[in-house]
Image (tube, rainbow, N blue to C red; front, side, top):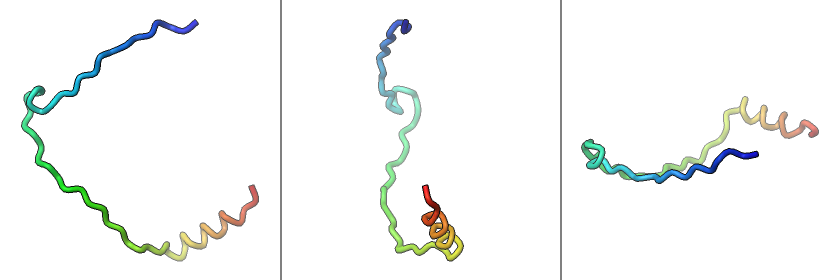
Length: 53
């Protein structure tokens, strides 16, 4: 038999409610680089892909 179902209210605390100073906003960005694996990693991938499952 399962235990009792407990429901809890979740409140979001803003920095002002918690008594903290607000953090500065940060710009989010994505950096994409055309990456090639180093030769050892490429060889390992080749070996792993050849292993029968």
